[in-house]
Image 1 (cartoon, helix red, strand yellow):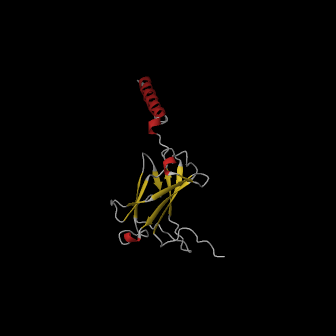
Image 2: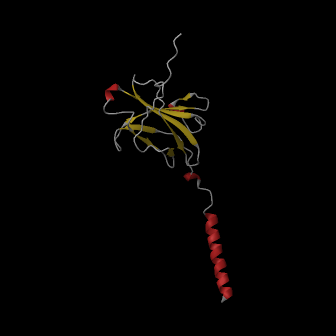
Image 3: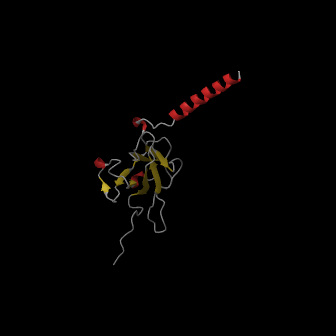
Length: 167
């Protein structure tokens, strides 16, 4: 009877080892996603609202703007992105970039870090009054990361680049 129990225990251990080894296999290619690009970001005043779509500008590793039609994960690898909300003054009251919600469309298993939940200030001006926006990173399913800066302001209200010094 003692031998029988040992054989049963060995059999159960072999089954567990087989199951454990199968769970360590690589994922099927159709379930591995390298996309770390934002395709749609919106500023909203309430959660669930439609909102206004931001302009996404993608830069490659050399800091050059990549035309929208040429943007792929490979063409912008090593670069960064900027999401710009240049709001018309006519939208004042309907939208407030200092106190807004953001929403983004993601594909498959992309993750935005830190998340976009909660009220955001996407002007985030520094001491000189230059809008800095907020920094986020989009992580793909395979772990590649792409940094984005999300900046919002009303036309003519916030300076987003330093003014040239007068001579």
